[in-house]
Length: 489
Image (cartoon, rainbow, N blue to C red):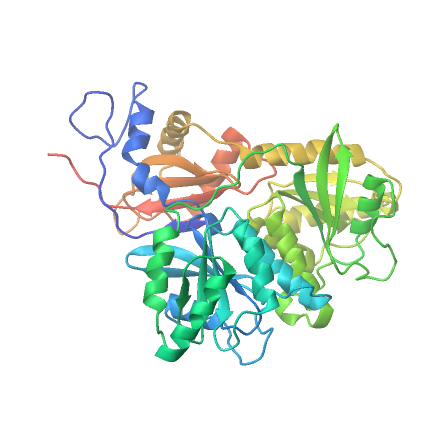
């Protein structure tokens, strides 16, 4: 959960239609639609995570200066830069500010045509960025000229609905700027000649980015497409066996050796009368920064699969004790804001003594960090209780998509605050003046208060939200906006 404490213009909350004075309360006649409109500007900035701000994806071939441009845009040296191709491997986002507007800029690995093996996984990260960004900046190398890879990606981007800006990097002189005119041939309108290393032309590029960048981040549209499910967990917990059982075919290679799956395996599966898109991922053996070789790239692809999923099915080996790595994967899914179902696999190997120990482990390890996830006990090998998987995923997704109207939400808030006021801070009692749900997927709530709300009290609000409105199977995020009370004269 996150608290936001910066100052904001004051708003007054009316106690009812037509009233002139402001009180720190409300009644049953409050026009909540009018109140929500009054707070609309404040609410608009409170979409959590990557959805808070519109995103600019910086893409291009390896070693054209993408990370250097990212560092120039954000005004500090964050992205790793080296004079060899392939240094950037994952998509990494940073917050940037230009002319009073804040947005996210996303550094990507180099895109290569017909890349194979590990290079292909890097290219896929760039493709995901291009598919989810609000604006794309294609970076080319002005010292090399137009290459076949530039032409291929430009051809793809010309068909995209996302706006595209062409930046020709490494243009350090007037002569080089004239030579950069050849990039008009890519058919992406005006090429912006820049030198990311020295700052030449980057101000004009940023002005154009702001001109084309939407004011709000692109939100996911509700479609009839299959819901996306990622199967994640440690190596050898039965992810591939589960996918094979669901599909009725040997879709994934299964072996007793841990780490058999390296690339995510994507399958359309019909369950409960409709299609689901399941992705079998590589087992997460250790922290990403401790992995190396193909294990490092496999972990990156698994992270990408979690980000692309709507609901994650986390498989745990019920026959073995819950480990620190299991808890780390759970935290990764929760941080990504995805709906979650925990499936205890290999239940056919669990005897009565192990069930007793497992119940204690769940109470001791899981309950303190993740009490809201749905849990099912299954056996991917025998097919035991697989019918319980679809109802659990449906319930988690329903919570993930749920929106609470402003009126009932503020009525609930009044009751909670009356029963359990926030703790005093600096000798003053904070007053929560208004709350609203800013977004779904995951449900994100904003509380406007006259004082800072402690983390413990925010956990109380989250727990009471769950008790009243449900949200089983979905993370819930509670944000706080602090501003002093102003009395209307």
